[in-house]
Length: 93
Image (cartoon, rainbow, N blue to C red; front, top):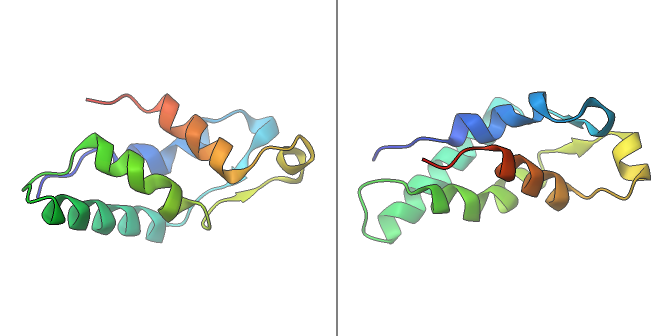
């Protein structure tokens, strides 16, 4: 299976506005996203991971691995909103 994009999604929090920063996901987040995307592709009878696989799974995999800053929580930003912003910043091949 060929996989692209996982590293970009997990690395994106480093580039998001510092005022609304979240604690970065650990390396296990990228490993989990990689494994889940591969499994989803396999279950869909494909031998490659599509960008949609990563986008569909990012919320479930990253939601509990991101810890928002107090400033972000005070602004009412949720982890889902943060992940949505991350995915919007990653270019889809």
